[in-house]
Length: 101
Image (cartoon, rainbow, N blue to C red; front, side, top):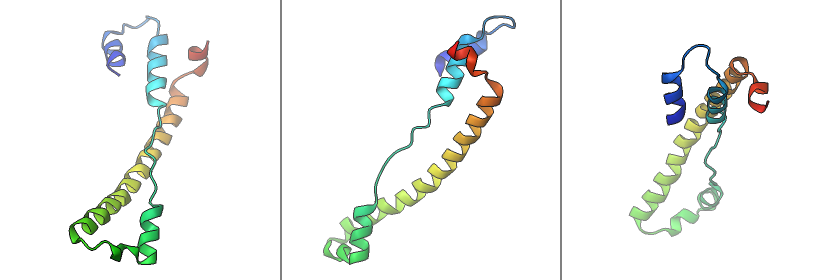
């Protein structure tokens, strides 16, 4: 990203744009999302297994962790929508043959 910003600041009209194309499409095409599972927590919760955790501080910590994952799910959904919109914009702005040339 630093190199892209530098190139954009130094760019003069009429200069080659291959590096700008490549860096912009490459950077904005990264759609990495964290992977996690709530299966164990859901099983403990549904089976009543959480009651086996006697220490209230530990139970609160485990519950807070999985409640935080709910907020993360909402954030990820918004992020995926923004990435989708970005991919659509990239297709309109950048011509893929110039990169793959």
